[in-house]
Image 1 (spheres, rainbow, N blue to C red):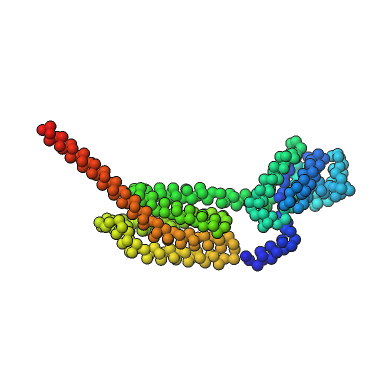
Image 2: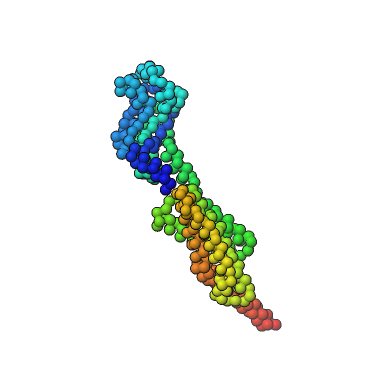
Length: 342
């Protein structure tokens, strides 16, 4: 949204853009006429059959332009033409005697196709290379700024699910070590897991893409949101130890510590809200999602967490009472049996 970026986008709309997909060719001889004929044939095939490829330049086009539009059929003829071409022109397409590059112009593909479209186009080109195979002993690699950018973004965002599960596991393990109580370790984690799920659904509904920054929000909100749930849980069990029933204990806990939790959450929320005003899109989107996450964490702490912990606590008390009753009955039966024997 910054003015220079808007002006650049307008210029690209007028000029058509200059994004490229580069094909790196490794060979033992860049002057091989069979290789140059293949490069020329493949380049024409891509331009004629792929609507998002607008042009192609390579050593083959350079040789043709300096040889009346014809590629020589012999290596000697190729080297003769190359000897007449300035090194500055040849260096755009070759490096030494074993590396050659083919540049496929894809216009302003990042805006028109998006990352998924460019990834699809790269896969199509790779399939075309397999179908229209190069000469033997030649390796071909697809690269370019757009392709590398997509790979980097994928590497940064694809690990978000693993990071989230790892965070869940570590928080659960930490709480379990501290409390030595499965219920106290489980409830805060499951509450924040629900918040993470809500966030993903909300991002999908708002058509917001994951970025390297927003991909970390699962682990971030797990740490921040779990704190609210732990504070509420601590106060709840303090009231339970005083003899209060589950519902009464939760009401008392919400009354006494709820204000502090809300205040803490709002200060965090307002702090991250400043990022929303950033002119840099990736920071602004990070601020928006963080604000949403903190708000959802607060809502979950007061709406989802109380019934979950009260229900599970009552179930555990009922289960313990049932086991205690069974032990009592067993002891009474043993005493009766001993009396009968006597």
